Image (cartoon, rainbow, N blue to C red):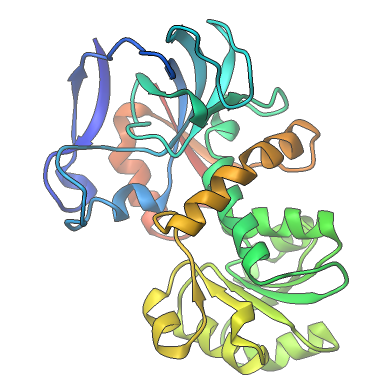
Length: 311
């Protein structure tokens, strides 16, 4: 029997249950994966905190994993092509990643980058595809200067790396203790707090053409609106209410256009990781049984890197 975390009622992670379940054998177009690491993301808790249209209980927790194939459905290929039992893979946009083993649609499974550990690979794609979409929807282009709020977080670090590869200059807000992280990934760190707009203007030395918000604070949104003239080039992943009221973009993996984009960009990000051009800082690995501890840490907003759960 496998083990997994599930939400049996809507609420905080403390209401989740950890128990045994029978992993179904893979049908055609499905793959069974022995999970070596599960990625931990704020969305894991957010999406079961309250009832959602079309979602029913129980809800298996976790959207991305790294592991190895233990079974393949008849005539089945994975998202990256041919596969065999024992191959190391990553899976993204799956249900129930906080588990020892899962059966998932094969088109969501890709060969794992050999350059990444399982803990790193399990945390590559949710943050990476979100970052890629933020750059895409704001039209960030080589030679431009953009503003990034939350630059030292998981999504922010991926934005910094992807922007640097494209020749995009990034002014990144962060706490003073995290300035070296922003600088290390190619950004220009600026401390948030009183005087932020003046510090950004000084660091930019010219126009800031787009703003990407990964924190959702009023300071971040107000600063973006002040500095970026074209609201079509402001995007948030954390303040949808402000986006609706102030007329700029909000994206989320649950939106059809976002889901489509994130699926399309998976292979590109995996290739970047394989080439060593995209890394995933992991702050902590915890046993699968410690999922609630992982959620408490990530809820602080300052874990210092990604967290992986290890069965």
